[in-house]
Image (cartoon, rainbow, N blue to C red):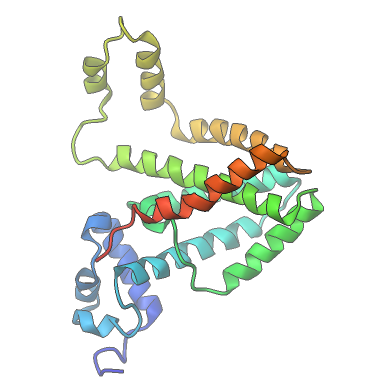
Length: 241
């Protein structure tokens, strides 16, 4: 290990990287920017993180570990409450960081403690009448919904220009020709994001209930194919250094 890297820990790098992300977003997150925040040269980081993808994995592991710990610490009355709590906590954790949902989707988790939390969650879902496969699919569906919703939400909130402003949308969408589109867009733009997420999540979880006890052939295989391809689609949105 070089003399520059001796005083730097992986935790310190992750802390600095999260700070850079919050300030500059995904486009501004580089190893050079993280090194500057730590007052070292970029090569000093390579002992712990070899590139931006590895850095994002470490950052994502930190965030998802905190989400898993928070979700597992509460009381669970039934599987619906458990999934609702998990999604709500995950959304809060992702929205806590600029571009958080985009940065931490498709994360390769590097902390084995996450496996312990996942094992406990799957075992508990078995007690609620899910098979291990069905429980895995249930968490995957809820996670995908939460990440997708957060990506959309953050894009609107963090837009550098006024493209999502309600007034501009009203000018662009002719309410006389497209009354339903105009009304739905206005509701989405002016409504309470927390309440909208909760309502949509409830519908998702209601559908997830169909996994309890198993799904019939075609629907089950279609679901699994979608879940199989989702990680690759999420990974394509991550930027390399």
